[in-house]
Length: 163
Length: 163
Length: 163
Image (cartoon, rainbow over all chains, first blue to last red; front, side, top):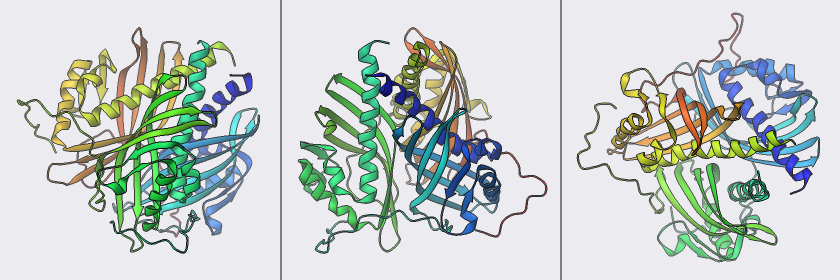
């Protein structure tokens, strides 16, 4: 293994750490910690509508105050894949299983993906651009998140006789 | 750390990437991408029944066309553990939380494990053998997947008085 | 990358492996394997009440016999974050999505966190202290697990007009 590959192993760990820190900080509603995970001029796009798009880390943190409308949340991150553009920029895709509970006890679950671009600043890796897409959700989740697009079946596809 | 340990760290990352790519490609229904993750002569066993066992990457990809019967899916991979047999073969166990939605809006969730054998080919790590087992599922999931076997309690075990 | 950073990459993998092994062994009800993952004098705290706190690996394994009251379980671990105190001690936070099914078919799901302290013994990394906290759960889960504390909204916070 050469030095670049070795360095990338360390950077993968650091990037994973940033992505996980977002989830844990969101469940804790530590918006100061979340603000520090993004570049100052980041752009974050959870879905159509001004409420779900933010420019700048400070505006994002402010915007995420909306998460207090839930009484409890739990964001489970998996399927982390990272690709390096060069030594100071990378892209990442990760999956999130996000559970939310309202004060009245009803819940909403979304299964989605974060598509991120990260930049290595002096203080470490930061998210410069995040786009969320939704694989699916339960009936309780009604926020308009960008849908994840599947490849459609060929015209001659016939559904198999299984449940 | 010696060179073998170092190489294994890199290979763990590459193998994890293959396992995750399967999930993401399945949710996208990118069957061409899935075919490329397996050895040409792979054997995949999701459960009893000819429909759920495939020999060869091409046959597997063809078989997975059945997943189009779902309108949306989300496969969340975790608990990845990898053991090396030698420098070009490894075994892996991973957990999957797989959510499926039918066109009528009803859903089916399975919690299972992939037990894999992987081979390092010139083009990278590929899955040569996959057996899926099921830890559990919800009432909506009715496919006959291989059950995961727990160790049974001793004969003198008494259930505790808790819920 | 210097030797310490390199060694930590290897140790992160070994610690992750211990945390995952706990989940997999619990789903298999391999209590012998679980006992071997903890230090002899470990302290484990799942919640208030004598039944959910254990001192010593043997007592913990004995205590976990209670899990046989479930007919099936599935523990999905994610969001693993590890910090090193020195070369032989570390702390880890991980998320668990734990599904449980009773013999009557009813289920209980908890979404929680393990907060662990680990020690590197001659035989490898072992969990010396574990505290579980709960982000949330469904209506079926009634065990009294330590709650995870969120930061409260400021006094002047106004709930947004979204669902």
